[in-house]
Image (cartoon, rainbow, N blue to C red; front, side, top):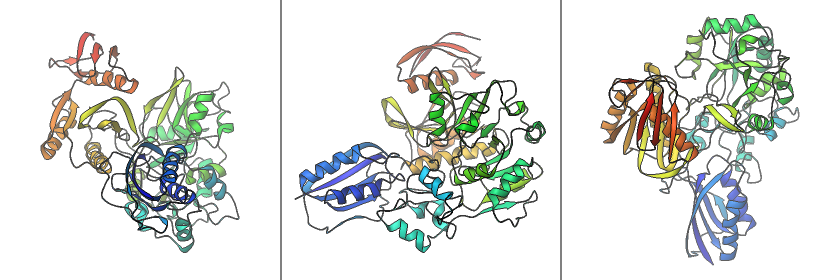
Length: 542
């Protein structure tokens, strides 16, 4: 008899990995335990026949849950101690394995939960916060690692007896599903009038759908933030939103019930359909059909419209009851400022702009805008990489010996953290020219570092412009962490990002961006550069 101490890394917390390992160990007749660790990894200790353990380890990779990603499995062999009589899921350990893993992104409602939600015989019938081990919020509710309910915003919702039984049953789909809940013990959804007074309605989602179809504008709190919702077929309603939020031309994102409905106003190819129905549920830019019945004001002057399918129980219920082919779902914030996430904040900031508020009492820890994608030359290209993708890393073709935090420039910012060849890109942050957004950037950097088990980094990269607020922030953070700062030329950064994404070592590129601070201290415009990842030669520019 032998003992194997196994460290699994990748996306292995919050995706049903521990229940999977438990069932696998029972199937192979092994004893021991599995537990989450403080650096998002999973530790497995098993004892039994070496032949059985070898098959067990092979099955971890071959049969992993669909949402899991196993990057590495490290094994330490020794003699069995005989200390175990069974296999169990044990309490998580705050300490880490010294390896790099990551919590999963938020996951769209799965088909099983959707079926239960619309089943009159199910105890979660019409409950908007239904979830299981295969779906639901992850990144937006986590406060710290390891990923367990007490370290998420679900900690204030103690499980009822029925949910506790499911949570502890290895055969149940909600075994160790941390966000699981029901109408007895989980978050509550409430409808409020324009003044923020709670309305006494039997079903907030069906009432919301009716109000939307009547032409009202409603603020809706979802998984990662608060949207402004309205019907898409009424010019007056759409024009009202544009005026209230000072968005004269910006295309509005929309949400539609299903593919069949989308095909009534937009064209969908196979790749776009795959994106729309993926568990990431991004907004996909689609070509309008010739008989598009949506208001021209939804995406004025262009032949495309951004559409997403419902990804939360709240959305599924509203669109189930609603009659419009699609509803505007645009971020409820001033352009460039962080997405609204607090109920009081929403009522205070949106009073006079919306007619009603559909809000819940679950805290959003990490706000996260919707991702926006378009198929270009047969492949997805991001306009915005956020919900459904964050904090999944972008894998690079090279490794860094140092841990690097990059703050970006000042407009349409994200932050990134590089560990080895893993580039962890944050959710969309906004324009750091605004104080609130700069504070949000600082907060996001701290939260992401915490989730990655970092107390400090070696290098902080920032734009070359000496007067950018991000440059000042980088200097302050570097001083606190005793890190070096590196100034990066704005347009070279754009081209380096392209090289990193596509695994290139060098290129001749055109950075058709706006103005940027040049390495000679003058203002540069669009640049033609011969560049690699470390340096560049400017061969032309405006």
